Image (cartoon, rainbow, N blue to C red; front, side, top):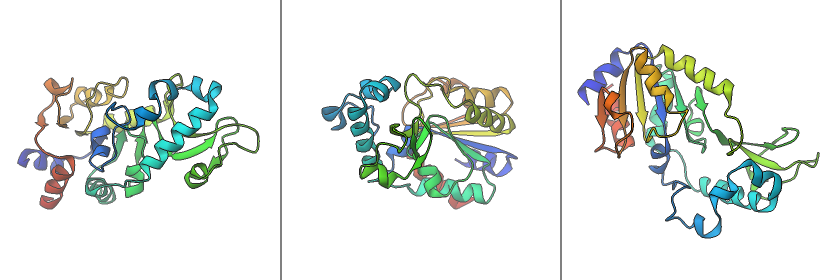
Length: 238
């Protein structure tokens, strides 16, 4: 921790990359986990894709109303709020995240590149008209134009947001410290960013409860500490 603290203090540009482990510490379960009640109601493998939106609209909508309702039960934890303060105080330059819950923005971060989209954005699939999350949950699931209201997340079968990836790549290339929080780093192409940072000379820190595919490339590995405790301890000493 002393070495990570030293790197954080000395770095000219620090970027944070977050995965599901960041959100589960808020209590939000990973929707892919089959020990959840979600799998008793739906099959996410069938509904989290563009074909379900186009050909199974009713069940698609029910599934995403359920998921949004689950997200609304939870909120950012202290670690999210610390990262927001760090960005405000220029300790970090921004966040790249695989998460779609919007907790980083809810906590106050401004520079957040959401590689897989976000539940903060609800819009018409046809005309892109924005709808509030509250309206979506209370029944506004059809647009005036006749299109289906949907969350602004990337569904299977859709293209990833290239502009977001490009901005995240620019941010990563400037980093001399890259910190991964709660990601298995197994999902491509999102997992390219830690290696891009490393190839550009950045120090790589990985904080995750389980081993990741990129552990051999990390300068520091932390597997025995909760993310919020890791951030709290660093923040205390900054």
